[in-house]
Image (cartoon, rainbow, N blue to C red; front, top):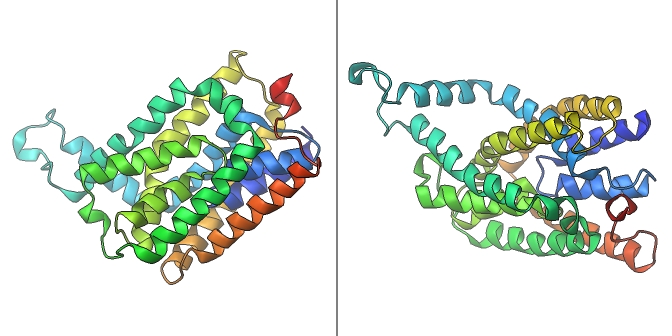
Length: 285
């Protein structure tokens, strides 16, 4: 991978990670079209550390408050100093932990499929179109009044299962969780905010796991270009988070629905004409 290709992929990662359009699908497609082939699951996971670091900065006060109260609610402290488990921030901490279990479990169990079978571009086409339709239905026909203070254990598990679907390129981590949130009746802004918070444990764990495999020789990436892409993804992702939260507070998700459908048709056309191969040479070699 060249430095220019890494720069482009870093921009793509930052632009698409938080939008319901699938960053992994975009990295896969742009990587193939640029001639550098599929950048791979390891590259994708590591660059996502950059975008999730942007979430850490933007939601710093919320994250510190949730972590602080969650630790102070543990039975390690005297009862007189302990925060009650009913505290909204304590509950949110537990909800994020519970919601992270599905993707952590399935990510380990399906690692070989994630690195190979799931990256078939026909799978990506199907997921882009299918989840576009689900997002449109959920955004237009579900109730829209619930806030994150009303999050239940069942809702947290369903959010987590939706996030786990993003292991398949084309689904979109934010798209899956936002669609689930809208279907369960949460407002657009609430669904987006929880999507950002829920992604952090899984993305950081996945990125660090893949980075460790690179260090130990289990995976391979071009270290310098990958670091550049990660830093670029951080800067671009920071700007996208702020813009996206403002957008969803007043607008529907229709623009992303139509974009996903367009991208699915465009990608299918490239595959049918032979301009792209559904399986990367990097995967089959």
